[in-house]
Amino acid sequence: MSRGYCHLCHDMEVALAPLAEEFGASVVVVDVDADPVLEARYDELVPVLLHGDTELCHYFLDEAKTREYLAGIR
Image 1: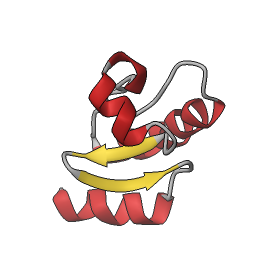
Image 2: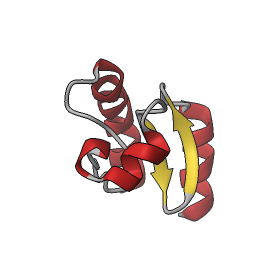
Image 3: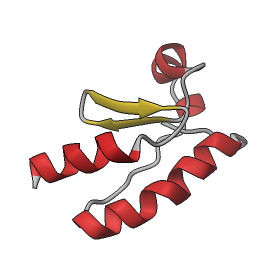
Image 4: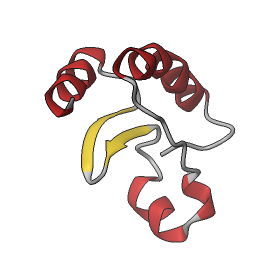
């Protein structure tokens, strides 16, 4: 979950790119402001990194947790 004017969102995207490439994962950036339900749920938490309904981290990339999670679903 992201928003266009959020510097933390941009930072997380940049930090996530090498991990996504390493694990062959695709990243879909969803604008929370485009959906009132998502905005209500994630408004103050963005950026939020999700895989399905699993929240991996918010505000900043937790690289260790994300790496462990990606290794577990490989």
